[in-house]
Image 1: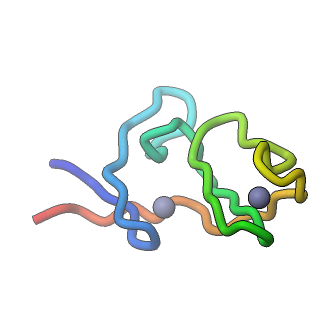
Image 2 (image 1 turned 90 degrees about the vertical axis):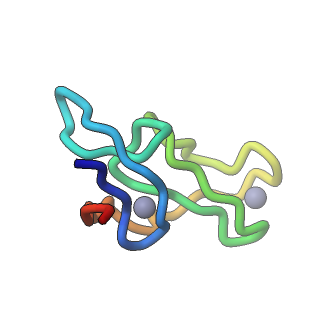
Length: 67
Ligand SMILES: [Zn+2]
Ligand SMILES: [Zn+2]
Protein backbone atom coordinates (compact mmCIF):
# COMPACT_ATOMS: atom_id res chain seq x y z
CA UNK A 1 0.00 0.00 0.00
CA UNK A 2 1.16 3.54 -0.72
CA UNK A 3 1.34 6.23 1.94
CA UNK A 4 1.29 9.99 1.80
CA UNK A 5 1.96 12.68 4.41
CA UNK A 6 -1.16 13.97 6.17
CA UNK A 7 0.29 17.49 6.44
CA UNK A 8 1.81 18.16 3.04
CA UNK A 9 0.25 15.48 0.85
CA UNK A 10 3.55 14.25 -0.58
CA UNK A 11 3.94 10.60 -1.42
CA UNK A 12 6.23 8.87 1.09
CA UNK A 13 8.88 6.22 0.75
CA UNK A 14 10.15 3.66 3.23
CA UNK A 15 13.69 4.32 4.37
CA UNK A 16 15.40 1.29 5.96
CA UNK A 17 16.85 3.41 8.79
CA UNK A 18 14.18 6.04 9.42
CA UNK A 19 10.88 4.48 8.36
CA UNK A 20 8.49 6.60 6.35
CA UNK A 21 10.20 9.67 4.94
CA UNK A 22 9.35 12.44 2.50
CA UNK A 23 10.45 12.05 -1.14
CA UNK A 24 13.67 13.93 -0.39
CA UNK A 25 14.51 11.57 2.48
CA UNK A 26 13.65 13.78 5.46
CA UNK A 27 11.44 12.82 8.40
CA UNK A 28 10.95 16.55 8.94
CA UNK A 29 10.02 19.27 6.50
CA UNK A 30 11.71 22.56 7.30
CA UNK A 31 10.70 25.98 6.05
CA UNK A 32 12.08 29.45 5.66
CA UNK A 33 10.04 32.00 7.56
CA UNK A 34 11.07 34.80 5.23
CA UNK A 35 10.51 33.41 1.73
CA UNK A 36 8.27 30.43 2.63
CA UNK A 37 10.28 27.87 0.71
CA UNK A 38 10.23 24.34 2.16
CA UNK A 39 12.66 21.42 2.00
CA UNK A 40 12.04 17.74 2.63
CA UNK A 41 15.51 16.37 2.04
CA UNK A 42 17.94 14.96 4.56
CA UNK A 43 19.99 16.50 6.00
CA UNK A 44 17.76 19.54 6.03
CA UNK A 45 19.39 22.94 5.40
CA UNK A 46 20.09 24.91 8.57
CA UNK A 47 19.81 28.17 6.66
CA UNK A 48 17.74 29.04 3.62
CA UNK A 49 20.02 28.75 0.57
CA UNK A 50 18.10 31.57 -1.08
CA UNK A 51 17.84 34.33 1.53
CA UNK A 52 20.02 33.08 4.40
CA UNK A 53 17.30 33.04 7.04
CA UNK A 54 17.59 30.17 9.60
CA UNK A 55 15.10 27.42 8.78
CA UNK A 56 12.49 26.14 11.24
CA UNK A 57 10.72 22.79 11.49
CA UNK A 58 7.40 22.82 9.66
CA UNK A 59 6.16 19.33 10.48
CA UNK A 60 7.19 15.73 11.08
CA UNK A 61 5.98 13.09 8.67
CA UNK A 62 2.53 11.67 9.40
CA UNK A 63 1.82 8.68 7.14
CA UNK A 64 -1.72 8.04 6.00
CA UNK A 65 -2.62 5.25 3.56
CA UNK A 66 -3.65 6.29 0.07
CA UNK A 67 -6.91 4.60 -0.85
ZN1 LIG B 1 4.86 16.12 5.05
ZN1 LIG C 1 14.40 32.01 2.38
